Amino acid sequence: MKNKSEYRDMWVFIQHDGKTVEPVSLELCCETRKLCDAAGEKLAAVIVGEIPAAELDRVQDCGVEKLIRVSGTGYEYLNVDAYANLFTVLCRKYAPSAVMVGGTIFGRDFAPRFACRLPTGCTSDATELVYDPKTGDIEFVEPAVGGKMMAVITVPVMRPQVGTIRPGTFKYAPTGKRACQVIEETVDFPVEKIRTRVLSFLAEETDESLNIADAEVIVCVGNGLKGADALPRYRALAEKLGGKLACSRPVFDRGLLPYKLVVGQSGVVVKPRVYLAFGISGAINHVTGFTDSDLVIAVNSDPDAPIFNYCDYGLVGDMDEVCEMMIDRL
Image 1 (cartoon, rainbow, N blue to C red):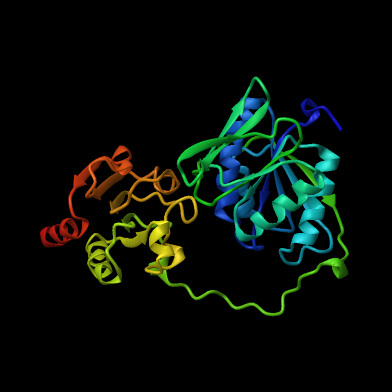
Image 2: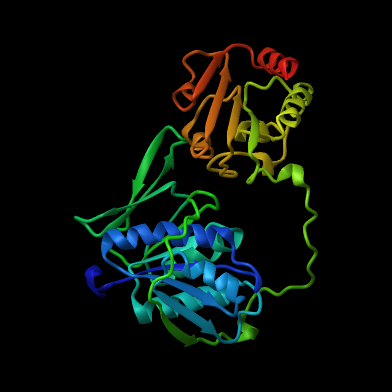
């Protein structure tokens, strides 16, 4: 095994559908660019197959210094077998110090598989990435023990350091193009060895009320919600504010609202202009879902609720009464 100092450059897997790059891949490129600057390493984007020139420009605008373009058999659709093999082969050949993968359904599936084959460690759902110049390790900071503490996870010996990061965790903030080296790789995987196949495809029906990621105003209800009968008033408030209704994980667990409306580490990371939190305690695994909001307003009957440590304005009172008062004023 090589000494870890022999591993260089940080990679980001660019997930796409042939037309559009997944936003999380661009977000990860921007955040990994910061790590590369701190470590004195280069940022490489790994692209399997072809993407439109405009999408390639967006990738390169993130400060990418290497493009690893991959062709070959087995990549007609996303599958764990071919992609896990591909990254095992590429990592053994080029020895990157880190590989970042978007925490999509596919990314969370294949990343730990190739990490295990190398073998190395794979972390998931970090809310912060920090480079430690003393050790040369990346610190993956994430909530633990139900959000009661923040854990710092490192891969101190093995390389590369593999991590999957949830969409929306970091910002897409392009730094501009840099001189970029293009590396062409052909890695074939026997199609007959792919253990899954696409039988049919049905596009998911889009319900815009469930798409809260881009909402400018969010009214979020927590476990203080008395029941389903109380929900209409919060929907009405959200509509009057031109926003959308969301919830914390316990509300979903109670079966009151669908999973797509969950804000937090186990749901969606949102960045609205205004975030109103009703009856939310303030557990860190929820708070990490809205920390980039421009304005946070919290309502809770408990004056000692942790949520008041994370808001711009806090109201102590019955959440239903406060909601009705706001509707009346609007």
